[in-house]
Image 1 (tube, helix red, strand yellow):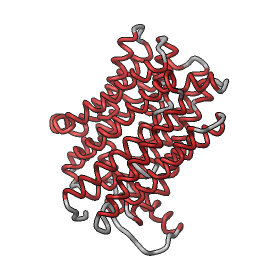
Image 2 (cartoon, rainbow, N blue to C red):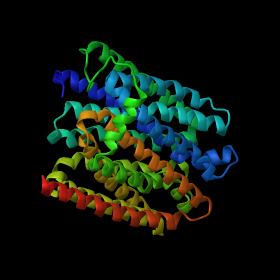
Image 3 (cartoon, helix red, strand yellow):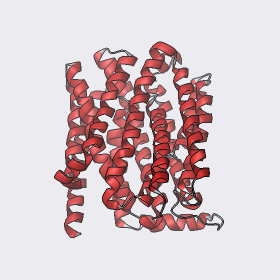
Image 4 (cartoon, rainbow, N blue to C red):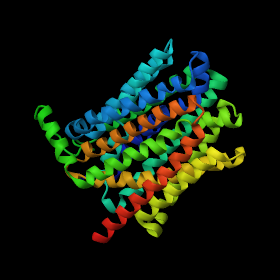
Length: 401
């Protein structure tokens, strides 16, 4: 853990939070656009969801690149480069002439955004003691959740009022602003701020693969990566189709569906505000189980409620529960391999978004066949089972410690 001035650390954290806000907004901005994109490009909603899956796959795979790069060059510098690339590719996405070009440019956005949030988490792991880390990560979560809410709402609003291309132009400006602020901070900081380790040795694929094998040989690493992959498929994969459920199941407009999705993010903000109290009251194992229960409740309400009001409540419950569960897993990820934290955390993010991609793929098949309700129900059952497994494991680890 490196010694930096509190003022410099706080400034870096604020600028990283802005980049993380834009990253999450770009990740979720297409969710409420799917019905409109399917109409504009004359494809099914499932086919249009490729714009979400392409982002998630690229985001997940590129984690394998950014992890060692962050450990080697410094996490703030890599976040700066990734944020700058996001600004460029967001502008390119706004000009996409057809669905194929849109999917490719979204993949490029995902590949660039992959270097932001996970390395911000790893940077916090370097700078913040474990006892304060979940609270600090919850603070970063305020930015990411706010970005998710803004992206989902603005994506729907842009479709209705401005055109979907405007949403990506606005994102390009936001990324450019964050990159400029980070660039000034990196230049003003002392060498080594935000980096866990920096090496002048040339990159070696053999060494990288050997380090990865060493990480995967650790039981705790394998456990965290396995559960986050399942979480990504069950919770994140279903999230992408909640606006479609609101549009097709309850007759809401794209803008209204995007507005409803804000409640998912508000659930996350509520969690971040009370994270310290709930953690002290329930412990990590209790928080994970309660979070899984809330996600399952939300999915069941979205699947079966005849009333839009209950479906809206389900969206809030799912958001609150997801961030209870996911923040607990994030904290575990920052500590599962402290000697290679950048690589470990980005492996975590890689598996999360590969799991999400699998979930989106299965959901795309279900929505085109009218199976969305039973698949939401199955996901709810799966999340409950996952929460029980995670809670028991954390309880056993706490007792052993």
